[in-house]
Length: 475
Image (cartoon, rainbow, N blue to C red):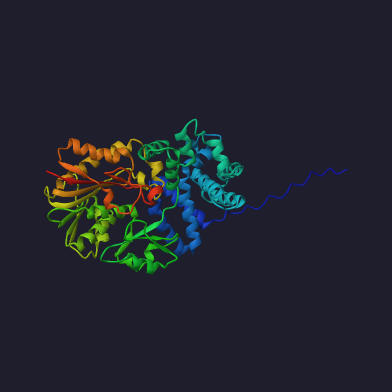
């Protein structure tokens, strides 16, 4: 008879977690977005530059990190609903860093082709590094529950049926806050197909679009520089060039020299339409009343220079005014950049022949580019912008001479930020002006509605959802 106690298995030696530079970078970017209200498109580039220098990041590493950050932010609402069904507490009680790791893991499992075992393993390893071993076990348990179904399977479980609650269904399936789904649907009109197309377009990675500034560069030069496999002409703007995925604008000489720039095609169309409206009388002084960060101002300045006109670019915030100066540097025609409040302008009434006012707004038209904005904005933000938008438009109409033209633009399709602002100013502010049909000045662009104003859409035009109203001062 053996009275000896059974031997205990020797404890496994502790293994230090291994840092994965790609996932560490993605986590750092998400924490910056959450903690500092930063924008991913501003946070990510310097992190990638640092990683190339110190970690030896290759192109594929940068591409994966970018996909992890933007994919997680775009699908945050969907992943939150799925994670909530896999934990035993409200999501608000889960520490934000833990939730970021879980969301990154959920995106790898449900939104990429990374094998499930690799996605879970890499996420748990990340959790060990940034959260500690204890919370890494929680991450492991939740992610293993998520592996039980693919994305479609989860959506069947966490999204209410469309027939019961259309807006709630679309909000979870397409990862938009419910109030934004409702606002976009009101602006778009129509049935289910149109709103689903729009929401899907908001979740797609947008193309990088360049503008060849007239008289300084040409689309042909840009296409030759990027190569026929890496660039395509713009869809609508004669100055646009679209880069293939992974194209690097900063590598182009014309961009480095300021002769070309990065600018969404919708933004180009707004500036071009204002410049194309015929005028009676002089056409010598142009104003960009909300010029920061400078894309439209640079295009307007180049167009003005070709006609012998001068551009005044005004921007309230000094640091943004410096960005405008940088964008306009080297413009062949006369221009001036000032830091001034467009609601209390230093110029005299009737000083300009053409005025553009691209007003601050909720940015709901650029959710493709700034996916975190959809989670940051609140319904009360919309009326919060209204007084400023009306004041800027009123002063723009005063700034233009009789017979001159004003372009009111905003990167939002929300009805309260677009036509409602124009109608209210024309009715209440005592400024005599008439609508100009903007559609003829966007030649070749289809599906522009009944006019006289124009609303562009990501799913119909491949642009940000820019709005433009053209007005002529009559007295």
